Length: 396
Ligand code: 1CP
Image 1 (tube, rainbow, N blue to C red):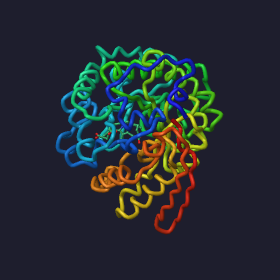
Image 2: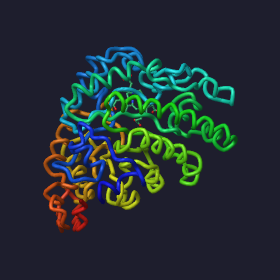
Image 3: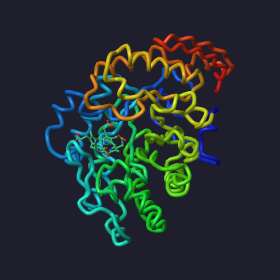
Image 4: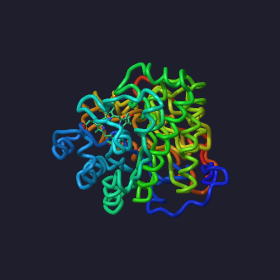
C-alpha cells in the first residue's frame, strides 16, 4: 500500500500539514510510523476527574459553546494519557441544535428533541449551517487548539444515519423503529433529510479543517443496526458524497468512518472514500483488515468494557489486538467504542504505554528500507496463544 493508493482516484495532491510526520497522520495514510499511534474515542469525559472538575453542571451544549473550556477539555486526555491525537470536544448534534431544530443533550441520557422530525414540513427546520455565524465557538476553539496542541486534532461530525436517528426518534433508541419506518415508507423524504444533514456535516467539517483540524472522523455510530443492502441503498451514497466533497475542498485530509456493530458493513464502509475505517470489538482486527481491504487503514478495536477490570485483562486484550494488526502499516489503536464513564484512567494510561512499547504495525524498522520483511510474532496472551507469521510488511 503506497501513499498514493490511499488517495481518492484522481485526487489532488494534499496540502502540507503541520502534523504530516506524526504517527497518527502517517498511519491513516498507510505510511510507516515511528510508533503505533493510539487515541480513545470519548477520551475526554466523565472518566477523568479533571474533566468533572472543569466541566461543572448543566447541558454539555453550554460547555461546547465556551472555547477556552473546550480547549481545556480537549487537551486534558492528551496531557494525561500521551495519546497521539486529540478529539475535538463537541457533540454530533451541535449543527442541528445550532440551526434551531430544538435539540438538547440531557445529562445522563444524551440528545433529546422536543419536536421530532416527522414529515416534509420539518425539512424547513433544517436550514443550511453557516459555521461563521451559527457555530463561531467551534471555529474559535479549533483555532485555539491548533495553536496549543502538540498532536493532531481530529475534527468530527455525526454520520447521516446516526444524526437522523436522533432527530426522528426524538432521543436515544434501542431498536430504531421510527427512523427505519421513515426510511422505508418514504425514501424520497429520507433522501432529502439525509442530504440536508450531509450538507450540514460538510459545512461543519470544512470549518473545523479551515480552523486548523488535521483529520476528520465521521461517527455513524448506529449504522450497524441496518442490513448491508439498506446501508448501501439509503446511507452509503450520502456518506460517499460527504467524503468526495471533503476531498475536493481539502485534498489529502486523513479521514475515518466509524460505526458500532458494523461487522457486516465494513466492506461497504471501505468504499465511502476515507483513509481509514473504524472497527468495533466484535470483529477480530485481522478479519477486519481483510473485510476493509489492503488500501485502507484500520482503527480499533479494544472492547471498552475490558478496561473496567484488572490491568492483566486489558493488557492481554491489547496485546492480542497488536498481534492481529500484523506488521503492515495502517493501524491506529483505539477502543472499539467510547471510553466508559467508570473506567479507571490509570488503565488507559497503561494501554497507551503498552501500544507504544509493543505495537509493531508499520514500524519504520519493519518497512523503512522498502523491502519485504518476514516478521514472526509469537505472543502469549494468557490462555490464548496466537502465532502470527506476517510477511505482509514492506508496503512503502
Ligand atoms: O454532559 C455530559 O458530559 C454527557 C456526556 C457527553 C459527552 C462527554 C455527551 C452526551 N456528549 C459528549 C461529548 C462528545 N460526544 C464527544 C467529545 C468527547 C470525546 O470524544 O472525548 C464526542 C466525540 C461525541 C460524539 C457523539 N455524541 C457520538 C458519537 C460517538 C459515540 O459514542 O458513538 C454520539 C452517538 C453522541 C450522542 C450523545 N451525546 C451524549 C451522549 C450520552 C450521547 C449518546 C446517547 C445514546 O446512547 O444514544
